[in-house]
Image 1 (cartoon, rainbow, N blue to C red):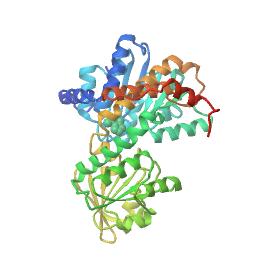
Image 2: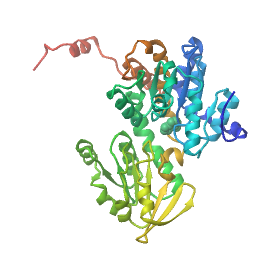
Image 3: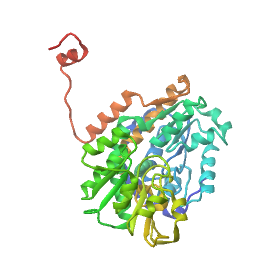
Image 4: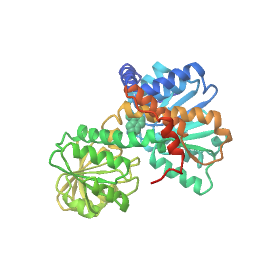
Length: 418
Ligand code: ADE
């Protein structure tokens, strides 16, 4: 079996951590049990490009239980958990191509290695495999039944391919399932981003001014949790509706140019590029902490920061201190890459449970229906989304009401009025 991981000697710890995550993934466990019986993915080769974490390991194990041939590469050079990569290879026989801290060339070598297995389905977190299938690896696209996409940023890229009429196969936007973005993007990013900042810096949130750039689902989660830790939260936005929502949620809203002067900590979660630029870095307080929790490392203009700096040194793991020409310092965390996965372990298993149940069932759906779908971007079928919510509630021991026949009739009627 061909693979490329950092150190096979780490596998024992990886296995323990994979099993620990599994304990908090009851919905995915149910999917795995059903897959193991029915083998719905038999004969299918799946190449996944996801963050190599304990939760992703459980997804890969589930896909294999369903009969799929699988291969995994990283969707970010800094997010790989090397012990997990080793255990997947050694204990589960799943080839992995991923090493934490790999350079860009190795990152792409690993993506290409995943495509070399001639997949029928790809799973992306950020659309990098699909991107390659539309550029350097066009030939490999002919085997593809369909693809799935985990994140908002990836879905934006895919919709752009579809709008330009060049998308080559159907894609399921797993991100857009309610049981994905309401929970993973909000509560997952909220908790894991703060976890990353804390592990990297061990700074006190209480009483600090915390600036969140972007008030999408991820931004809402980060703002909510920073407030819960006692920070004074400031939100920056470009969308008037989201900005208004932030105001009504009790946050101060202002342009980044103003926020730059008052923030102690900054976190970007916009999905856009160069959100914090050199003119903003120059206005910051001495010692300000700056990080990103959006998918790509483009939200902080680090080229601009370098241009206005006279020195840079690593002062702690994941903390680079830049000394600016004006004499002040700015600390960039995790090289501007996703701080929750660079400095912490990403979202907790309990939310990834629903995200990855969606992924597994989306793969099943593609095997069954992919060949009948036109090339477009689709949401996860509602029945799957609702079933995942039902299973999650059941796993939490929660029960809900059911409509009475009279209520059902009322909802279907238009005659009853004032
Ligand atoms: N994205 C965010 N958190 C993650 C995790 N724990 N595993 C995989 N992908 C993630």
